[in-house]
Length: 605
Image (cartoon, rainbow, N blue to C red; front, side, top):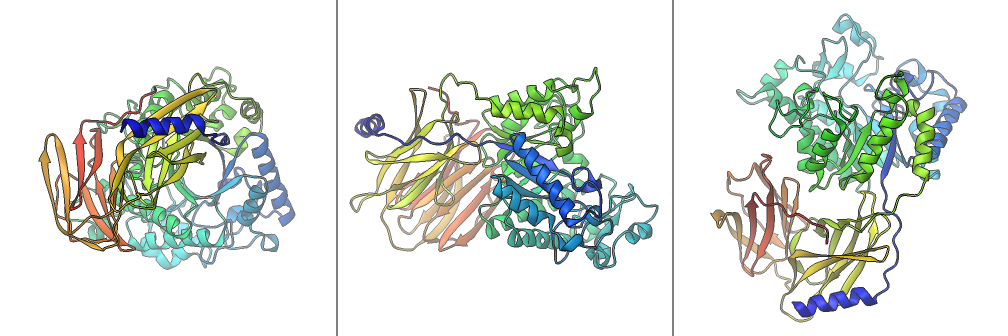
């Protein structure tokens, strides 16, 4: 082992590693179309006027230092794009269902000019709301819809809420199917960089869905649990659909900033504001912990020190929630509060927003910010952002290296690989670092900056003979003549086998403060374990499974087969307990060992 480590260290010192570009952080701006808040400025504009306004938005976004535009394309069960199912938005033309001048497609135009100028374009959709103008009755509310609106053919899936507006019922399977169709059209017809939801889910606890819960819920099921399951189902399905249709496109949600308070849940934040878990039935913590989103962008719309929702308290809570998961953390910032503030308000001027940006930049988890909204940045705030994002960053005292994930093809983690297979590695390191990874005495590669605030790359592991071989992974970051090395404690093995195997038994036990979930095999198999958030994903290659036993240690167990591999998803209980999982491999067993109360912490030095 000492010889291997010495060889790797020597290679580090002698090899010239190409410099990587500065790590990327997201700087996004929401462009609201509901009520013509940002775009268009008025309904019924000509195509030339619509293009001119879009050009101005992109020009300003670039001036302010943004790299992504989040365009609201479905504000209320309508479309600011050429949809085969959703009617043209009245916010665009003045009359729902009427196309824009000359058939102008705002989304297509925004995508083109954003990409021409190096900006990402994320399509922002609101899933459930149908109308935004309060009506006195259900009949009056339906009269506001055009004759071809799909809600007319799904009237039994539509609820007239106490705010006078219509909403699709999230608990109806037909609604989820319809929304997946909306997403599929956007993903297949448009060159999007992302699909985005905001904080609008159930409008409140008085939502009239008793008939839906009686028909589709379980006996005695709590209304809140039923509703959260419905929203969870949509979020999970949209995430899966996005990755199936467009693997390079990001799916994320911007929920209300407070998931729950300490009074609502022992896992909640030390705040007193509204709780999206109970108020809107949005279990945003679960989406992060179970990797059901590519990113989360909580709306932290309070100032530092605010009694109901201290910005620092909430930032820390979300950092803790997202730190060991695959979900990138972006922070939604209330630019509108500064734009609307009067003298004497903590939001007056640019100081509060600058303070919050400093907190985000100092975070080891958050990797960007979104500003609500475009119109709030067109004055003093936008100029301040332009100056801030254009100035050089201060030098960092010393490089920090934190492994984020070690992936073996898909998924990964602790692993026994087939010889010749690639290990995908991701880590967090300071912007501008040169980051490399090593396995064994001669295998190395350079990690490149990714769009999640980190570095990623791949190594191919191979054994020279017929036997398996194992070695640790080593990560190295170099910046400003300082060298930082981190040894990954889990060994990565290279396995030679071309024979399909079977799982003969799956059983579990507790031993030495560990919970063991054991797979007995007919022979050696490459296997990979990945621990992200509360989810353990085990892939046993070239192997057929049997049914999983019921193990009360896990909150949920499931398995699938893909390309001849058996893939197991083991969900740990979200009870605030820190756990570490690792793979134990022999020629005839694969074991997932979970240790409770232990967190793998990556310290500096």
